[in-house]
Image (cartoon, rainbow, N blue to C red):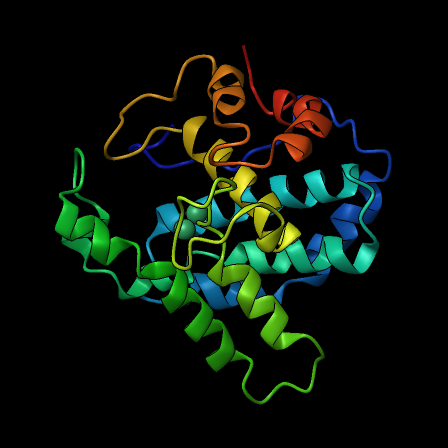
Length: 218
Ligand SMILES: [Fe+2]
Ligand SMILES: [Fe+2]
């Protein structure tokens, strides 16, 4: 790891039956990486994290048997899910240790900021489904048991692509060091299993256990 930054993930072995298609989808989404990498106040750590979440989330979607359009959507949306962090003060974003209650309330606003920025980026686009995609971004921190934010949605009320991004997002964070946690979590699959039915969708996790496991180097 370089200076505590996430590294770009690659599965130890691909268990996706159509990885070639996935790679093509990722290459087609070149607008998003170039946008992210030229946004001045968007940290390199969030940039790498977003790439990794996009890779993991699209692989999860492929393994769940979602159609190609949805796999492409989850990839593109995952790249932008944390773009709203560019509006969070750096002293909160990079604060070592646990955030205070007040700081966490500010940090929580990033998912709504991400939704707003996405809608702004796409305001002149005639592509279909922009509002639906914006909602997927908005809800990436909802918890399956309703304890998440910003709207406290429960279970199937949370868009399925948001639930996929949530799993990829949490998993990516626990297999890499963070400013508040200098080492990756040991036994990440055990940690994920403990969150099933609480923070994350238990049924999805059961289907993609091997996908996540393939990203862990023991
Ligand atoms: Fe987030
Ligand atoms: Fe994230």
